[in-house]
Image 1 (cartoon, rainbow, N blue to C red):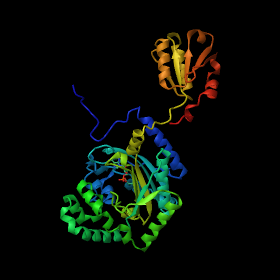
Image 2 (cartoon, helix red, strand yellow):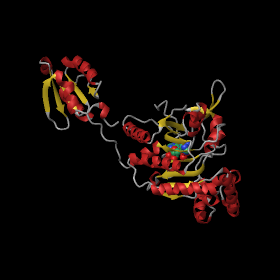
Image 3 (cartoon, rainbow, N blue to C red):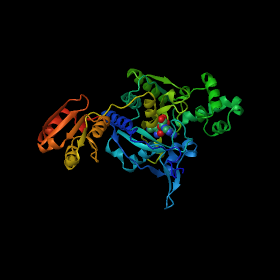
Image 4 (cartoon, rainbow, N blue to C red):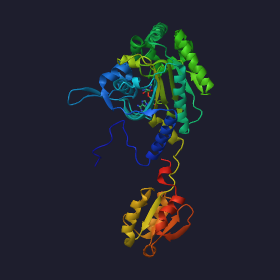
Length: 430
Ligand code: HAM
């Protein structure tokens, strides 16, 4: 009989064997974010549909094709969040955070939803680590955010990353660029896919972001002669761009200008950046972001600059897994081996020890040999053996499973002995 229920297409279960990798990556990220002075913000998983439509852009793939939009029982028009930025900006405005300091550094982590075609590295529910620096218009803010972006990857063991950067200018210079690109592509227009021809009318810049393999090939072939966005920047935009490049160079952050980098959301201005890992195939972007100076105004707030990014955690972890990377094994831990007659003591001792240490025990009090074998496999550092005779004498035996050495001593010394010898749970890498 086939299974009645499976996880919905594009979603997946993360099983206990897989989660140590996630938890380790999340914990490392929290450490880096704290050192950069970022504070966590948690916003709802769903918001008004209109919030996303307005900010991501009605014509963007995310809004026009990939939104999980639904009506609730009160007939409200809602959507599962396809990204964090819009919700974070909504919360920033709703709670008047701007009145509580000039610059805000905020991060979030959790599931986001996009109705795309599932494939390797592309899911309908996936996790993002998102960071936003709100309130600073200076190139230094872009540089700090890109440094944080790179440092997160480095904390996870990625090396030799190159950040692709571009400048998308202002809405006005982008419009001028779009017109120039439309004119420039006119001679080959009819050779492009229907989708790209449509984009050429509505948002020509999006042709550079085409998903059509034939169009991609064509864009690639034409790239060197094509008009470039950075050539259409106004004076302020150019000064900002130069400031960002200088800052990245000064910090030794490897970067290259990618004139075709346009990003998939419409709210970007000036700096845009991404990191790719080609081993992932078609879905190679590990993360991306940029500046969004008009976004808060678009939501009815005062003109407020901002810059941020999101990292696709599923993809980053997929790369680590493919490279055979495993999180450091949890050190310490106690496996309690008890006999039928000492089972009650085992339960109460385990409860006491669990205030400080990770403790496993065999609830069925199986044969001694079977329990010792299980202790060896468990990854625990210590086997705490509660033999009948020792217990009668008020003693316990502690066996170091890594060296095989063992000692018997009064039970009253157990906690102190473990404290001295076995790392406490709180110190274990998570
Ligand atoms: P984004 O480039 O749309 O940016 O998404 C960021 C990352 O999420 C991508 O680089 C990718 O790693 C991951 N991702 C996107 N779609 C999928 C998917 N279907 N399955 C798995 N991973 C995926 C944003 O979302 C912006 N909000 C970033 C930002 C923050 N910009 C400014 N602040």
